[in-house]
Amino acid sequence: MPHTPALPPVLARAASQPDVLHWRTWAALELGPALIIVGAVHGNEVCGAHACAALLEDLDAGRLTLTRGRLTVVPVANPLAFARGSREGEGNLNRRFVPQAAPASNEARIAAQLAPLLGRHDALLDLHSFHTPGEPFAMVGPLDNSGAREPFARAAEEMALACALGAPRVVQGWLEVYDAAARARGEQPGDEGIGTNEYMRRCGGYAVTLECGLHTDADAITVARRAINGALAHLGMAALPAPAPFAGQVARLRRVVLREAAGDTLARDWHSFAPVREGDVIARRASGAELRAPFDGCVLFPHPNAAVGEEFFYLAQLD
Ligand SMILES: [Zn+2]
View 1 (cartoon, helix red, strand yellow):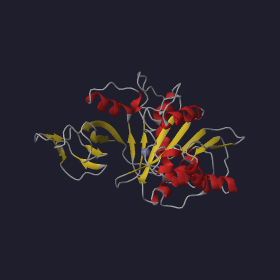
View 2 (spheres, protein in one colour):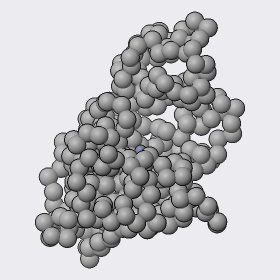
View 3 (cartoon, protein in one colour):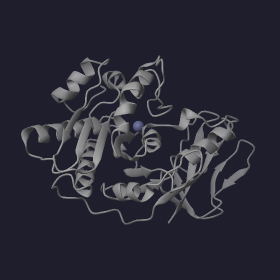
View 4 (cartoon, protein in one colour):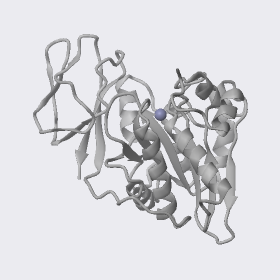
């Protein structure tokens, strides 16, 4: 059963036309920011698709009016994966999201259509869900920097959007630790770590991913809808009640640890955002060697069944 809630017509059609992307744009005559909201980049993460469908219905029915700027809604970014109820069609749309001259796979062909669309907007809200229990969180990219890998100058705007979505957690920093994981595997960091958000920043925009909750949890749709309202209110694009702004500590991704052998084990049944103190044992290598927290912070994205060579857990510092 790939789709638990009944499919609204716009999503039923997406599922029946896996070779067609569909989006809608409204432009208010009052100039303002250009926001693009995207659902179902991963086809089994349906909360964003449902929230986008509800947004389209509200706009169509006149229950919601765009007061300024330009709003594009892409309910289903990956129709093939959505139709199958699977994460991917032929690959991960959120990796190597770079337009190619001769796109060969489903995801490369989607990127060829979606990338120029993203590039015509200032801000991206990308709605996802996750596969283990945990609290929703918003994810932002790098701090402002002029480095070669991911130069950025809109960190403050990006963080302000992330804090406006009603999510109880905010995580900062992705590409740097993703690249570190690649180097730990002996690979050269390349386009593999470039997803929709990284591509958006390359185009001069900014982007927030919202992980809305468990794939199967109907509350994830509520979380996604609240985030959409929060984004539109924050950007002054619609008169909507805004959720209370996030005022907690931001979790800054610092480390990624790979599983090096099948015998590597997590020391506890860690959940994301579980606090750790410097020196706490987080995992043990097959050799018995202990992996201890190098600083006070929290565990993120623990994956007890990670394949050898893949990410075992992340560590973040709170500030
Ligand atoms: Zn996802």
